[in-house]
Amino acid sequence: MPLPFLTADRAFDANAEDSALPFDDHDSWRRPYRPGPWRVAAAATLLLLASFVLLAAVIISVAGSLSGAGVCFALAGAVIVGALRLLRVGAWVSRHGVRRVGFFRTTTVRWPDAVAVRTVQQPVKWLGFPRTVQGQALVVVRRGGEPLAPLVTDHNADFLARSEAFERATDTIEAWGDEYRTG
Image (cartoon, rainbow, N blue to C red; front, side, top):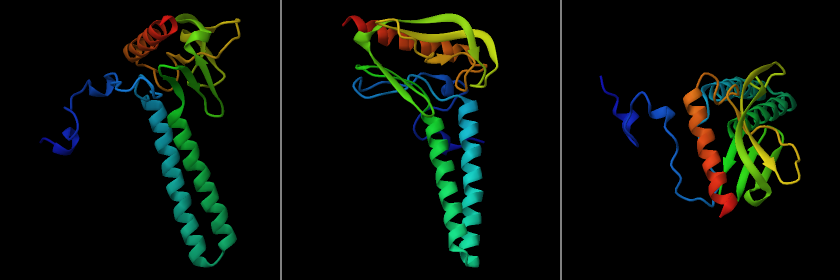
């Protein structure tokens, strides 16, 4: 049974979710890969939790405790903001440089300040937890030798068990670096 709503904007096939995203405007910040299933699942779970907290806030406000409802609304708002921020975490590129967006902090390196962008074998964090495993990481070597945390790893929430997507994303970011560092 075909589902026409799945094909409204593009052809639906099994490999469509792994295809690279197109870049029309090189001046705007773009993520050169799709968010991974672990990241999307965590954000969806947080949004589901926020919906229950919002429902509780409505019930509490109908019951008459406005201060308790206000606390619940604020908590739901914080969970929603956290889920949206979780979806923005990753590596972003533009003509101006490369940006590593973390949950709490964002670091931008201009292309002229980057000596090299390369994939290296090193211990990496598994899904961002303190446990480290041997894996690959895309690192930026800055002028002056200041260390920068890896942009992406093959064991983070975007690329765990998606080695082809990791290779494609790192190749794309390295190509952006080669093009704009020298030009």
